[in-house]
Amino acid sequence: MSYRMVDLIQKKRDGGKLKKSEIDWIIENYVTGLVPDYQMSAFAMAVYFQGMDTTEIADLTMAMVASGAQIDLSDIPGIKVDKHSTGGVGDKVSIILVPLVASFDVPVAKMSGRGLGHTGGTLDKLESIPGFKIEHTIADFKAQVRDKGLAIIGQSDDLVKADKLLYALRDVTATVDQIPLIASSIMSKKIASGSDAILLDVTVGNGAFMKSVEEARELARTMVDLGNAVGRKTVAVITDMNQPLGYAIGNHNEIAEAVEVLTGKSTKEFREYIAELAQLMLQLAGVEKSIEEIMAHFDNGLAYAKLLEMIEAQGGDASNLTAPLEVEYELELLADQQGFMEEMAAFGIGVVAMKLGAGRATKADSIDFQAGINLVTKVGDAVKPGDVIARLYSNKPITAELVEEFKAALVIGNNKKEYKEIIEVIR
Ligand code: URA
Image 1 (cartoon, rainbow, N blue to C red):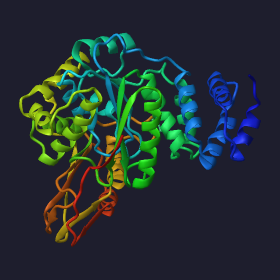
Image 2: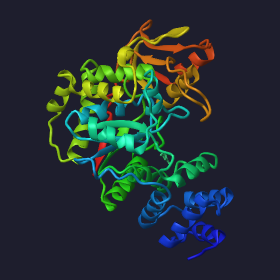
Image 3: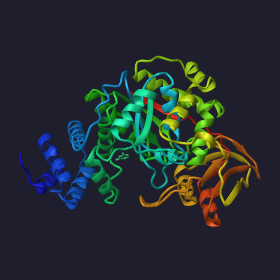
Image 4: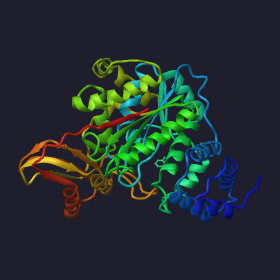
C-alpha cells in the first residue's frame, strides 16, 4: 500500500483516525528517508493537537519496534524484568534496584539513557566509575545477564531506529510532552529490549515531564495497557518528583548514595521506597517477598555483592565508590530563617546541578563526574538560621547568581509537609 504523506498529515490534522497500514507506511518511510523531517515534524504536531486513540498508539509503538533490531532474551532462563523511569533529578533508583532484584535470582537486562538538561541519566552515573563500560554487543549483554543475572548498558543503536530520529525531531519542534508520543517512544524501546515484564516509574511534579498526577496517571495507564496488550506484563508506579530523589544530585555522589542504600546505611524511608519498587518487580517475575525480606538483602550484603559483580563484569574499578567528591570549589548553603523546608523544587535544583558541571545543557556537552550537590535538608525537615541546607561542588567558580538560583528553588515556611515518593500503583 502506498500513501502520500501530505494526505496522512492532513487526515491527522483534521482529527481522523489512522489505520495500521498508514502508520506502518509513515514509520517505514521516515526511517528510510523518503518522508523528510519537515513532513514528520508537521505530523508530530498534528498528533500533538489531535492525539491518538489506543489502537493508533499500539500500532505506532509496534511500527517503531519493527524499525530496528529486537533482542530475544528467551534463551536466558527465568522471567526477565526491566525497569524504566520517565526521568528526574537525583534518580539513582536503577543503580540500587537492579542489583537488589538480581540478588533474588531474578535476571535484569536493562538498557539505560543519558541525562539531558535538568535530568540525570543512569549511564552517566555508571560511567563515573573508572573503567565502567556501557557499550556492549548484544551477545555480550545477554551472556552477562545469563552468567551474572544483571547488566545495565547503553541503548543499542540498532534498536528502534524510528525513535532515535523522531525523538531528536520532537526535541526541537516542541512535541516532546505529549502522551501518545511519549508512550510509544518509551514502550517501543522496552518491547524491543526483550524483557518479559516491565516496571515503569512515571515521575510527576516540577522536575518531571508530567506536571500533574492526572497526566501521569494517563501516561501510566496508556503504557501499562500497551505492554500488557503485546504480552509484556507491565506495572507502573507514579512517583513524586517535586523534590530531588534522595540526597545526592550528580554522578559520582549518586553512586556513593546508591552504595549507602545497598549497604543499609541510608535513611529507612529511602530503603523502604526502593524495597517497595523491588517488591513490584519481583511480583512481575512471580516471586513474592515481604518488604522485610527484601530489606534484609541490604543488611546481609547480597544486594551490594550483585552491584560489585556487575561493576566487575563491565570493567569498572569499585575501589573508590564512596570517596568524597574532589573539586576545586565547594560551597555550603545555609538557612537564613527558621521553619520547615516546604519546597525544594527538583527542576531548579537540577538546573543548578547541571550548571555546576554535573549535567549537560546540550547533547554535545561533557560531564564533570565530581560536580554536584549533596542535600542535607529535605522537605519536611525543621531548619533554623545557620543550618546547612546543601553543599555545592564544582570545578568552576560557584557564582552568587547560581547560589540565588538554588535559593529560588527553596521555600521555608511554617508547614511541616509530609512527603511520600510512591503516589499510586497502576496495574
Ligand atoms: N523518554 C523517552 O524515551 N521518550 C520520550 O518521549 C520521553 C521520555
